[in-house]
Structure formats: C-alpha cells, structure tokens
Amino acid sequence: MYACGDTVVYRHHVCEVTALREGYFEGKDYLELHALFENSLKLFVAVDEAEPPTLRPVMSRKEALALIDSIADAESIDEEALKPGANTPTLLERRIKEEYDKCLRTFAPQDLVPIMKSVRERTARRTDAGRRITATDKKYFDLAEGLLCDELSVSLGIERDDVRDFLVERVKKAEAHRR
Image (tube, rainbow, N blue to C red; front, side, top):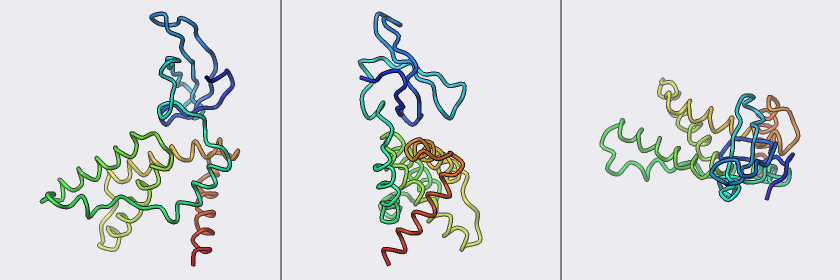
C-alpha cells in the first residue's frame, strides 16, 4: 500500500501520492495522484487495482543506473522478424508501430529502450539513403525518451532537462568499456 508523499509511476506518469480517498467512488478507496511533470494532471486509482505493472514505485537510483548501463547492450526491435508477409512498406511500418505500442503497454522502463534504439538505427539508415525520420519514428522516440527521462530524473535526483546529457554520457562510457 502506498502512503501520501510516495513517488510512484502510474502507467508511465511519474506521480506523487497526495491523498487516500476512502469510499470515493462506488464505495471503493482511491489513491489521488498528482503527476510531477504534467502540472494539471490529477489521477485517481482504485486501491484494489493499484498493483504492478500499472502502479509501481519509482526506480531506485541503483536500478536507474543499472538500466542506463544496460542500454549499450540492449536489443532493438527485430525488424527482420516483422518483414515476412509485409509485402508493402506501409504494412511494415504498421507492424513496427504495433511493436512500439506493445513495448509501451508493458509500462516497464526497460521496454522503452528498444523503441529508442530502433528509431536511432532506422533514422541512421534513412539518413544514409538521403531520407528523413518518419513521423511515426519521431513520435515514438520523443514519447519513449520523455517517459524514460521523467522517471530517471526522479530516480537519479537530477533536473529533467539534464537527464538526456547524463544518459548519453553514461552510455558512451559503458560502450567505451565494452571495447
């Protein structure tokens, strides 16, 4: 059970538990959550439904650093596995979007990494071919990066605007140690 003042992640929103509303709706108790990075967002979650993966504690500093350190070795989405039966580029793009959505639906921060890695790889290939990033790739990369940075900001105790630089620097160091 969570208490007022706890920092939690509801789906992908980093929130503070601000109140326990007893008998709030249909006789059920609800947790009132205020999103930390979306100022006007207030959420109510039934206490009996407040379980992982939907609602969980924010990552610890140790877990956050371990996640960042695992990025260099993380797998991207296997595009080749999606190609059979995808006879058109449009169908392949749809399958890739479905994979991105599947990663998001787990509500796990480690499942945001394959989205980001896949988009980076796809964008590099497209740039080499003289093409730009697709709107879908940009949308999902920005979403995954934002969600991950929100949680890492709280876990690491650094400003959200500084998380990306911290992340890039730490991943570069991990990649250098691998070599």
